[in-house]
Image (cartoon, rainbow, N blue to C red; front, side, top):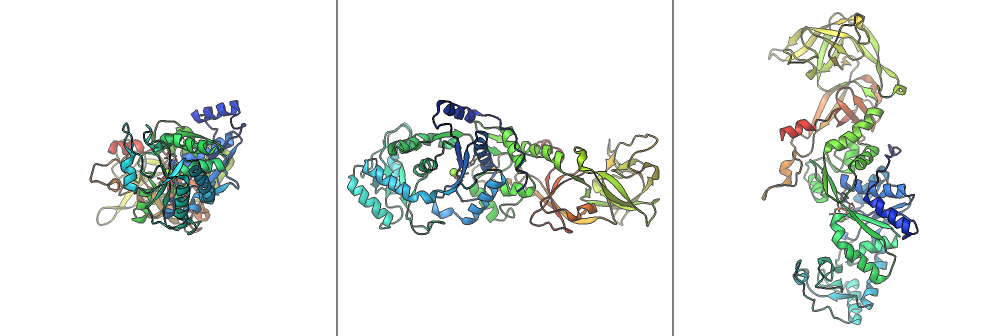
Amino acid sequence: MENNTETPAVRTNFIHELIDRDNASGRFQGRVHTRFPPEPNGYLHIGHATSIILNSGIAKHYGGKFNLRFDDTNPSKEEQEYVDSIIEDVRWLGGEFEDRLFFASDYFQRMYDWAVELIKKGKAYVCDLTPDQVREHRGAPGEPGKDSPYRNRSAEENLDLFERMRKGEFPDGSRTLRAKIDMAHPNLNMRDPVMYRILHAEHHRQGKKWCVYPMYDWAHGLEDSIEGITHSICTLEFEDHRPLYDWYLDQLGVYHPQQIEFARRTLGNTITSKRKLLELVKDGHVEGWDDPRMPTVSGLRRRGYTASSLRAFCDEVGISRVPGVSDIWVLENALRGELNRTAPRAMAVLRPLKVVLTNYPEDKSEEMEAVNNPEDASAGTRKVPFCREIYIERDDFMEVPAKKFFRMTPGQEVRLRAAYIVKCEKVVKDAAGAVTEVHCSYDPATRGGDAPDGRKIKGTIHWVSARHALPARVRLYDALFTVRDPEAVPEGHDYKENLNPSSLETLDGAMLEPSLKDAAPGSRFQFERLGYFFADPKDSRPGAPVFNRTVTLKDSWAKLEKKQ
Ligand code: ATP
Ligand code: MG
């Protein structure tokens, strides 16, 4: 795969300090072993990328190991498509799990046996309360709950009932297995939490083998323990679950990893709820999970982001225990820095306006020499054909110039990048008064773009030879949502009302310099003055390119924020 070589130096964070402490005390014999535990119920998004980069980065930093483990304990929403996409995304992000790809469902038997052990120890019981009753009995913060009437069943009765639960004798929701902890515990998670529920559902890997499924809190610590994870890093909402994570492992007396929490990081003007992302896909607001506007890893990849830029972004933003929203420009800047160094330059005209150089011979053409990357001399130069008729960007012409408009306007000289200095002499219009063509003279003494007499030319614009131009489709993107926090909507309103109606603009008449004819799908260029573009890996073909604009050259967010 691409772009996985450039790993930014890992900035240390509070998690490193905790690990250093454990290493100093010899708690895990100096081992460091992390994991990323996604539920295969959607595609990964930028928030998940943070977690993958953090966990795999820590493993790399300490010479440890990193596991990819599917937390597939919930049968109803999980699909193979998600499993496949997650594996691809984790690899692409540089999460090196080698042969350590695991599925929590493979541990179901061991978890079941451990549950039996807790029952035997008098630490778990089968409860016949309905889910609603369980909730009612739980109490509230500062207010103790009530013991279940089934709490004091004998171990024999519990073992019998639990086995029959497993055999499928009881309907969904009729019974649960609960841990016997303390219904007056100040932490509600410790009030006899449910360990197993009955669910007659088909599992994507286990088929119909199971009809009791473990709850997250019960399962997760056991998964970590089985895999020998040392530091189980998760997001802040699990902080209140840590006592339960510890309790289960302590009761069983098995190997005990350390859970560490950090704050979720979200991105402005996007959403990172899997349920809502799925809704955008299902309802056709975007073209799929990998639509280049999506904050999914596959969407960012198809937009043209590199894995190394996402790592640089994570490093820039850092890890903390305080939740935060990062602006998209921080992400974009992480990419600009990299592409400025690596992306070859090319000329493309997105909205063409024809320019005729009236004093340039009709049948002549020349090869102009253009620099491939001013940041990288080793990238060399290329030949760009030039002739009497060229295209320039419509925006680069104004018949009545605005103040400080130094581009093409009647009577003013302007430089065509790497070609000549030209001057607009005449404007051709159609019956409706729209400009259809501009006639210029060119100065043959300025080949390459510089005037031998040293006269100052303020503006430089890009161009494409009309005779040699390669027509292409170019897609321009804006933020998917018009507001920074799309989910903050008043009652009775929906986050989808914040969708940006002009997040995608497709230009079918773009003209590219002919060297782009063979641009490989998945390659990146800087189109001079327009931004960084990515040859779409699905839609682009040699000879018929389709380019996605990954990011503009400069930050345009200040402008957008003003609009809001
Ligand atoms: P849900 O569980 O509601 O489907 P989720 O986003 O928590 O959604 P998981 O598949 O459980 O999805 O997440 C896998 C891992 O990614 C978890 O360890 C989770 O803590 C982490 N994660 C999810 N979202 C973020 C985020 N925005 N920032 C950092 N880590 C995240
Ligand atoms: Mg989750």
